[in-house]
Every structure is written in C-alpha cells, then in structure tokens.
Amino acid sequence: MIKSPEPRSAKKISRTRLAQELGISRALVPHLHALGHRRFGWIGGNVGLGRHEARLQALQPTLARGALVLDPRTTVSLQEGDRAEGSVTVLPVRPHARRPNFPSA
Image (tube, rainbow, N blue to C red; front, side, top):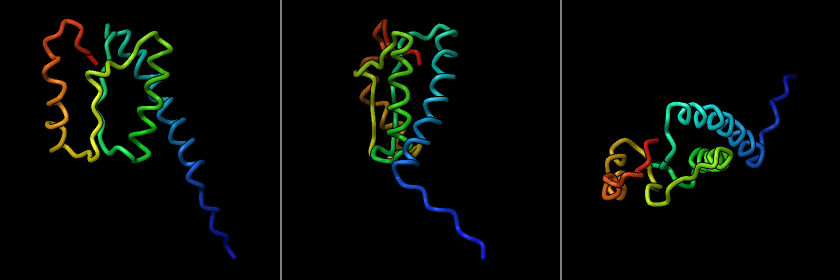
C-alpha cells in the first residue's frame, strides 16, 4: 500500500513561503541597490493571502539590512490583486510622484 504524504500544516507552509520570499528579497534588494535605487515603495494585492504577507514580511528586514526603508506614503496594499486593480492601486501614490525623493524601486 502506498501511503499519501502527510499534509503540511499552515504554519509549515508559511515558514517555507517566507523563507523563499526572503531569499528572493535578499537577491533583489542588493541588485536594485547596486543599480542606484535607494528609495523603495510597495504596491501589493491580495492582502490576507499568504503570498502578499510573506513578500512584505521578507522585504522589510531585507531593506533594513541595507539601512533602507519602505516609504509609508508610497506603500499601498489592496484586498484584491488583479491587473485591472493595478491602475487603481497607483492612484494614492501619484500625488507624491513629483517629490524629489520619490521611490525609484
């Protein structure tokens, strides 16, 4: 008899996902920094889903390692997350776009 694998607990999946996102952030942020980016914003969707939360939780400490932070004025999270809402997501950020210290990444 072939046994089915044990189901993963939500906690285990969350840790695994966070570890993956942390690895991606640790590769992406130094790359963007090397290209000259010093100011970062966040536009994310599907708030409440593990992917959104894991990515944001991984990004913040990765930025902090480089003495970088997310600008709260350009940090937007939406409940949904499809492309149609992407244009709506940018609306709260647009008034800040002319600031000289507007995020470049």
